[in-house]
Length: 275
Image (cartoon, rainbow, N blue to C red; front, side, top):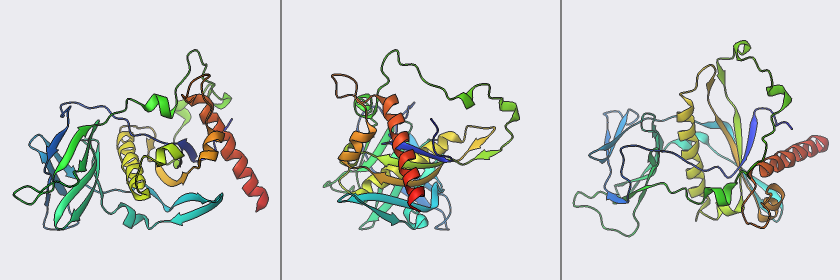
């Protein structure tokens, strides 16, 4: 069973990281941003005395990045200005950090991940510091429920390997850079975890930035993921994608992945026939 070339479909990606030498409990912090003389130059974000980020910008989006949602079963497409969508997203490759920076009434706001398993977000309804800085919550990323809601491999389930992967000779592979295009299918449960659609988009942009940072350690060939777009699935579509383990509410991760590949291939075939 093949995956459509250059495009991988995922059901609800999660940001899962590991960490060292960083806080393990919640803490209230007051980030401070230092800029160079040039507004477009490097920026330094001081979060605590022990946690400082050297920020730079990048790009992970396809030039025709889009969002697909459904209204009464009819697909609705929204295409974005990718430069505007990413202009407030910064990262620190060494820290495996990616954050959105914004201002409200002259005060800095930071939201994202600032270490392998550490996240930061503004605290709502709290007074500023004496210097006028906005308070933020620094806390560990909790992934305790990921197996239950995002797929579990049942015991003794053999993993099928396609025939074209057998006997692969890496020495004959001379491509220096591969750029897989990823299209993300977000299920209804995942979408409901965000109050605003824009919050979900920020989450996914942060996720892809961190994943691409991690892939920088891969060589021969180098890998640069291209974020192609997002589809927000309906509850009815969720039932097509997901297979559940017997007598439980847990998702069978392997079968569900095959189901979504089947769904995508059938839809692409139908689209080609219609056109």
